[in-house]
Structure formats: structure tokens, C-alpha cells
Image 1 (tube, rainbow, N blue to C red):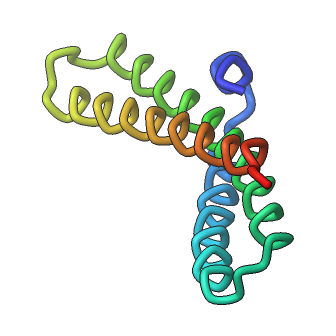
Image 2: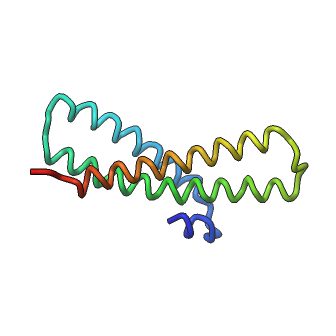
Length: 111
């Protein structure tokens, strides 16, 4: 998905907004499942979490690519561009960590 986000010509801004709404939905569903303790709901949350963070990876890679293109055409030494690059890299790092955690929740079941 990172490769797809980097090479696609289509704008993923709307896709990113949908993924952020899905992330909020996962948080709400996780809070509800905290009280319900449903294994089926936990499995469903894990599956949807993998899909959402995979999509967010593509969105964040495209966002970083656009920041990089802005550095080439603008003043490369501005502090705002450096801050945006660091925040974009942090978003991408959090996507990978959360994707890994949801994959562990999905496939790392112990009986």
C-alpha cells in the first residue's frame, strides 16, 4: 500500500478522510467492546483495523510525497516544511506500529 500510495496519480485526500472516520469508529467500538467482552467483536475490530491502517499507510505516503515535491519547488530550508515532514513521518510510523498490533491481535490468538 505504501508503494501504491507513492505511485498513484489519484488524490487520496477523500480516502484519507474516510479512513480517519473509520479510525474513530474503531475507537468507539473498542470502548464498547471493553464492556461487552465479545470475542467476535474483537475479531471484527482487528480485521477492520488492519484494513484501515493499511489504507492510512497509502494516504500518509502520498502526503509525504507531496511534502517532498513542495520542498523541491519551494524554499527547502523553511522550518514549516521540516516540521510537516517530521509529523508526516511520525504519522507513517504510527500507521506501521498500529498495523502490526492489529495483525498480532488478529493472528496471535492463544487458546
